[in-house]
Every structure is written in structure tokens, then in C-alpha cells.
Length: 329
Image (cartoon, rainbow, N blue to C red; front, top):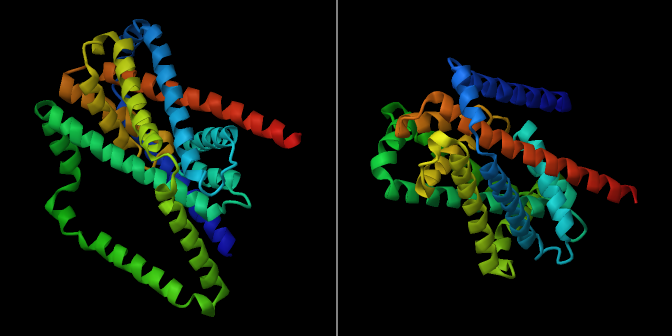
């Protein structure tokens, strides 16, 4: 019954996720003038699209190197191609089912040297680094382009979560945090009285060890450079796509910073691969801030999102084939 319940909850979760993506896609693409969209598409400068692909590929390489740096303290012999394959296959899984790829990564990289829970801890550590990076991007964008970006940020982002009704619910996350702390204390306090609690305490300790691994990274300056490299590549991807779409070619690197920051909000929305959410938010930003037509915004968002997805699928398929052939040998 418990297995059936878990399967049912997962089906409901992913069904709602796809429905939300479909709803956002509808709002993004409704009322589109497809003739104008087609005219803009025909003007695309594909040479800059090649540069976009190069920046996108480098971002994946930096992600692989950063994660390998976190795995090495537990498993010094971990190979670069194993980490690369795990990252690529997990990216494809995340395009279809948000979050599923992280569990695939854990399963593929876990070994006698590093447990599943410790690998999961390193992934959580990665996510914390990414959250900090997103916050830094927003701070820089707000500081450098407040006259352009400030009103949009206040009305469309803070305005959505800053109403009095929302502020009155502050106790919900506070209560959740207290409940989590009490639960953790109870697990460790009574871990010797139950096998389940004992295993839970061990798993939590391993995840914590994975989180703390950043203090054991051998080359910390390189780890920081990998993180900076990831987000610089994302920034260049936005910029090169500006140059590829003629109506946006006059926008500069700081404008790419704003679009990159807005696009990152889509990653928080629980839809497959950010589809729909990314298209809507980026198009809204380009229309509200820069006076671009909705068709131009949709073209930019579609090229940026779908071309990146195609690259992820190609790399993921190649890595899956490599993994399969290696196992067969």
C-alpha cells in the first residue's frame, strides 16, 4: 500500500508539473503574430548561435569539473569521464522530470569509496553555491541597472510575494524550520532504539559530510573559478543570443546579466526544464524593460531555451551510449 501511495503521489506531482508547464506555454504563446515571428526567425544570425553553443558546452564542462572537485576528497580515483557522463545523463532526466536527474547522479557516482548519501550531500553543496551565485547576479543587476530593472523587479517579483497577505504567513516557514530541527534532534537522540532511526541518522550524517566537503576541496581557487566560469558562460549565452536576434543586437552585457537573472527565476518554478516559465518571464522582461514586441521576446526565449535543451539531449545521449558500451565491456 505504501509503495502504491508513493507511486500515486509521484504521478500526481509530475502531472501537475506538466500541466503548469502547459499553462505557462499557453500564456507565453497566445496571441502571437506568427508572420512576424517567422520574419524575425529568418533574420537570425546563425554564426552567433555557434558561439552560443560553445558557451553552453563550456558551462557543462565547468559544472563537471566543479562537481569532480567535490567528489575527489571522498574518491580520489574518480575519473573525469564518469563524472561527465553522470552530469549529462542527469541533465536529460531533469528536462523530463524535474529533480529526477540528481538521484541518477547519486546512483551512478556512488561506490565503495563514497556512499549515495555523501554524493547527495555534494549535490546539495553545488546547489547552495548556485543559489549564492544567483543572489550575487541579482545584486549586481539591481545595482548596475536599477533605473531599468528596479521597477520591473519590484512590481513583478517582489510584488508577487510582498503583499500583506503573504507577509502574514511568515510563521509557516518558521514553523517548518523549527519542526525540521526538532525532527533531526529526535532522530539522533533515539537512533540506538530503532534500526530505522539508526539508518536515518547515518544517512543524515553522510549528507552533512557531503555538504561539508567544500572545506576539503584540494584546490579551492580552482573551485571558485569553476563556479564563476559556469555563470560567466550563462551570461555569454544570453549575450550571444542578443547578437543572433537582430532587434536585440544593440543590448549589451549588462542587459544580458538582467535577462540571465530573470531567467534563473524559471529554474525555481517546478516545471520540466523550466519550459513555459522561462519563455513567459523572459518575454515579459524584454517587453516591459526594453519595449520589444512579444514576438521578438518569444523568439529569443525559444532559441535560447530550446537550443540549450538540444545540446543537453545530444550530450546526454552520447554519454548514455558511452556508459552502456563501457558496462557491456
